[in-house]
Image 1: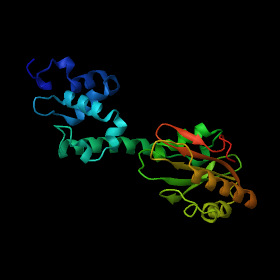
Image 2: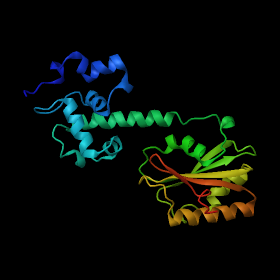
Image 3: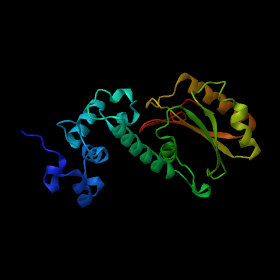
Image 4: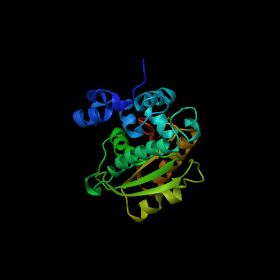
Length: 230
């Protein structure tokens, strides 16, 4: 079959025209990627290039995380197209994170699932671990948040003195810990468990309850409290 560019396709089959008619939600991942890429390669349409890219990387998440070097085996994606893809993913990430703003007087939690759903946008796409301490009032409403550690967690980085400094100063009734695993696996490490137990014990000493420590990953989470680690 002779090669035809998307411009030569029937109008009702072209991804851009289908998006305008059906809306973005009516298109497949390959069609949306084709619109971003705009053109294909030699003897290859933008849609064929998009399908090839999805097959090569298995998922949109893997495309987002891929390095420049990992695109070298895909003929048709050069610096310009790679920049278009990275820009589109970054805009999506920023949109998701912008929705994480909140009214402190309205934010309260009843379980770990609510903690995960609330903080997931804040941690989405981060390439390194961050450890967040949320201060809560007597009604479990968040009134302050602090990033205690920025990087791989160790007991030396997450010290009880630093974690509880503002909680004591602000007379918090309770604290909640949240950190992410960029690997995508939310299973708590030995360090995660040890740090949590140290912080829980410190909380008992100073009279501030630790409600939970939730590990957020790509679409999953683990609650150390629910797992019985404290």
